[in-house]
Length: 279
Image (tube, rainbow, N blue to C red; front, side, top):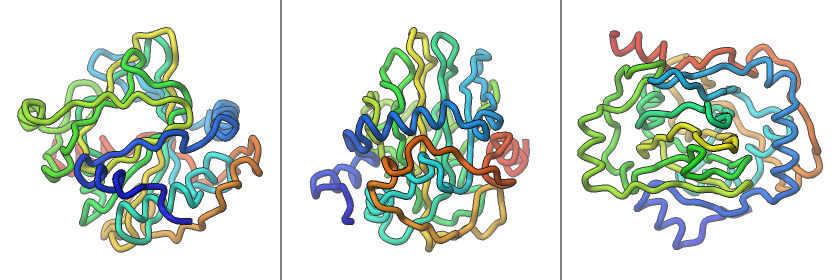
């Protein structure tokens, strides 16, 4: 199946570093994915919290290999993978996926950062990496939708360091200068919409101060030609078996199979990054 991107959307991605595909998954598909993620015992056992500077938390789960759960199949569909391969210029593999769950009134914020600000330290030589955030719920300014700086990927990788709380974020001075010249975009999404974004796009999110939860799932990919030179907590090149676009509906509410390396019990990036940057 060809990429979902039109020529205009491809140009938007090159210029802006991100593009939104509305209804990447339809209502039935997102309903199946939402129910599976809410009820999967393996995923629920792996949930952990990441706290912001004020102590509020985002609930998270991270898994390295997509597997055959309905949400794993979603990450392997042609519509997603072929679009990623178009964006990254060749074969990709699944780097990891994660659930980010901001509960009403208590969901925490995320500071400005680039994903490649972390992944660089995992031995990924080039920023041939990208993610798609799929909205399980409606994401708005009020419940902490993702904020992105248009065109920030063109600035290259920015140094990251330890911030208050449990997060590692981008150099605040560099972000301050970016905010003077780059447009801040609130990526408000309806359930099933997908935000594709480059690994060097600067992004953050606010706390969820609303009465509505904000759950999203992110599928992250690395180019096959960018195989990490270090062994680390995310997989090195692993061929990705694509599935047809009807696989999600065919699977129904299918949970993950138990696997020793499927879900991670902790979010490894900040502690390992802290060690590597000498703090």
